[in-house]
Picture (cartoon, rainbow, N blue to C red):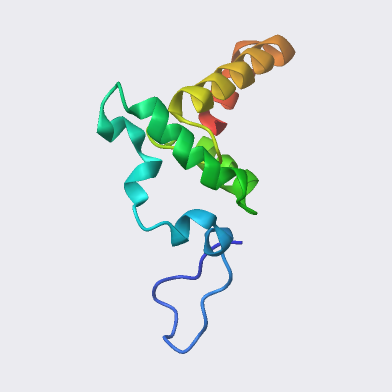
Length: 112
């Protein structure tokens, strides 16, 4: 559901957005969802911690779909880190190339 315009009258309530129900909203240290910031050695451990939150999140699929659509360059989104999301995008591009040639691959890359 699209968010309302920021120019909407102030008395209108904001419609429910999937992120309102995200488990990560209640995590005190949001940096855990961006393990790249902690360096190469600690990143896998911190990503694993972030993924534990995602594992019990009711909006995990919506989060992942949004991250893939936006091509989020960093962080853990929908339970997947940036490398895992890149692998999904590559598979989508390969699948599109097999189905419809180069034109379909370009469209898939833009949609991913």
